[in-house]
Length: 356
Image 1 (spheres, rainbow, N blue to C red):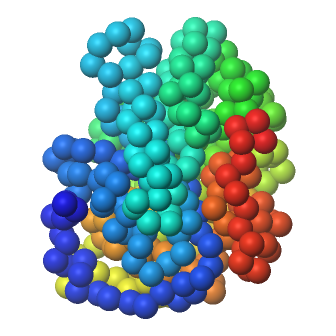
Image 2 (image 1 turned 90 degrees about the vertical axis):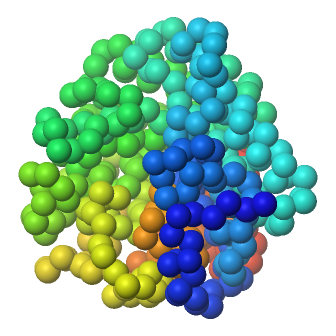
Image 3 (image 1 turned 135 degrees about the vertical axis):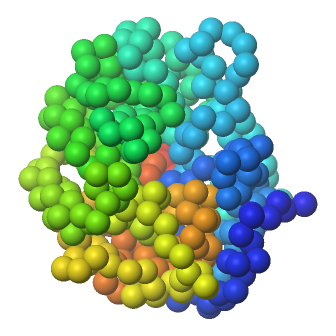
């Protein structure tokens, strides 16, 4: 039986028809978990995500992003995250059997590994690849950190300058030989760190999560316009970097940490969400070509504010079109320009092999 989120009845107050129900979409960033009581949705497994992706849009595949779910409880500490990949690959196998609809859930899997192990992380990466059953595509290791106590750091407590550490970079060097990508999750003032990382490893594809995490709490409260300008400027300076792609979520201005009190869930249309004066919803995205950007649902995290159906509607708006690509993109999370064109003809790509 499908588990209901704590705000299910409120979300159901807004009902919309799909804008382009035939357009093939790959959701490149979502999570799966169970018994996470602090979230709006304490359970988000195959039944829950299938209900969300089947609400009217043509979501043909998804990519799972690590969230600390189902780590092993015993064995060597560095190997325990492999349990998450085993868990997700099981859900992906259920989906691939065709009993849960046409969407291929977790067609790509992004797990985690402690890259600070240096050369010692090689065995962990190989174990992750094996556990993924051909679906494992890369690593995310959260670097989100801020010196102010009112701004939560990532659950792994990365500290300042994780991406600049020698031991981290020694481990990072093991990604490219395995055709693995890196998902960078950090705050806006840390974007120069990931820029430095991209310059040092031009052969590794880096996906910048959530447009670099613009903050809107603590010392950053009430300064959205100023900080968005700064984020856009950093994105502009980094345009030349190879294999660097950005993920857009529906609420960039304050990250998930800015919440707004509303009587009804916002509709998925331009103007549904407030925009700070002097900015536009797509301000950071305008510093990159569409081939360098992608949309993500970040579900079920964003379920606190919006239905997944509404998220898709909002990001399909003419002023913020980042969709494209068929079942799965070229780096397992990002559509190529040609795949965007082919999707307009209804000819989506298939998921590439790990070596592609």
